[in-house]
Length: 136
Image: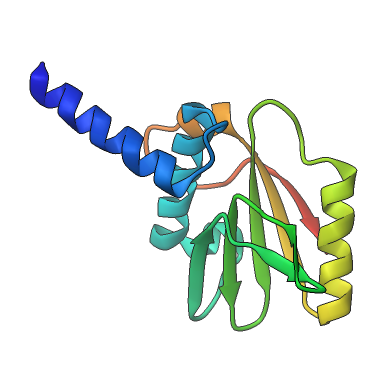
């Protein structure tokens, strides 16, 4: 039991360092799972070629943080943003910021909204992602 407590304490410290304090474990674990799915099966998210995956990547506009998606995948031809839905959907203000950022930078962005509950109910990497997809 002591070993489990030490491991859990280490995970909590890492989580506090990497992510905000007000993030639920449900949201965090869902994010980590989807991050792994992307690296294992990028075709589930229509990602082709070389790509780099980020968690909580800052997007800047005029020198300030403009928005921070849960997961960002930057590939040769487009950017994919994945938002994990736990308590509420992505609000219109954030979608507008993403649209404006895409327009100003002349890039295509795919936005996936995936329910945290659905993610945690999976036993293995799914054959198909159940999500709302918005092409910006």
